[in-house]
Length: 497
Image (cartoon, rainbow, N blue to C red; front, top):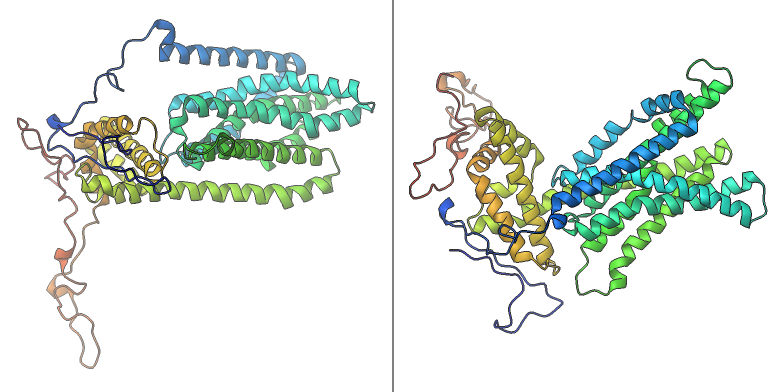
């Protein structure tokens, strides 16, 4: 039975490596068959002792989402009571338009190593329900506090509240979701892209509920002026908040998310101030951008457009570049780290390159779905996700920041990979194989005319020997168990074709 050695040497080993040099974790050799796959030790991830009812993960998850649902009902009821039923319905219909596109963008960015659906739903629900409910009461209290503390006109109080109070309250309320995931789901913070995705989902939910209030209020103002439909105020609000700046809230909160993502990859030996400096700096940057944006919206249209072109668009462009770079870096990490497991026999030699390309992953899912059904397609998707998390885990260990449960986590991921190997590996290798190569027959190759220079010495194979490319459907299979019959080719083309 194989074992999974820890990246940190024990006390019985030789002299440990210096602190400045990260310890290279070892990789256990893969077993020869599925029957030889080592089971995790008792008391680890698979055989945990039974917990009490109130300590159950399902009960806590259900209670959390119940609280978020109650907050959602309360905030929607308050908005409807504040602006009226008809403006509420109009604002809801207009505010929901950009939400599917924004959700698709963030989920597409997260497609390399998908986050658990619980994290996705929690982030969006927190922004749409809990954060907006907190911001509604806190902003109102802050505006009253400014009006009673400083002697000024109501217009000045509103301007100060939008510039100083609202950014502090809203970015703190949205950042709380990132903080909770960072504290209780630290394992899911594996790259900068994870912080951007979580922050973007939270901010998208917050902007959705906030747009209902703003668009419904604008529709109510048009209706009070005698308009029988959507008037100019509603159109102007829709253009500014939905068409021009749907990325405003995700841009602000992404600064906080990036800070927490950087804190997650800091080495455990660093002091606490170095671990918490990135989240605090990102939170302050988010408040600064938010306050600048709110302050410009209360000035002249020329100042607003100048700030929009000179600050907001470049900042958004840098965030987009960072997100795409982080996504490409995740794939590069898969291609660079997984060959160690291929050398140990856990993966085929061609799998690291195949798993590090999204095109091959998608093709493998289509091939598996075509020949083996939806179960095989899901196995390929889960296989790629577990392999990606395995690459991230080993990358952190080689950088000198191994997780405390590195050995158990590595064993868990390898176990999941081996369970899905029979269905996923042939599909990946099939998708990674080159397409069939057409070689013309000898009579199809025109003879070189006298006096002309030709580069093809062999007229039968003018483009080189055909044997240099492997056949498209000749790929190895997982080694069967001692009592299992040899598996057939599940992805071979039908014989009648």
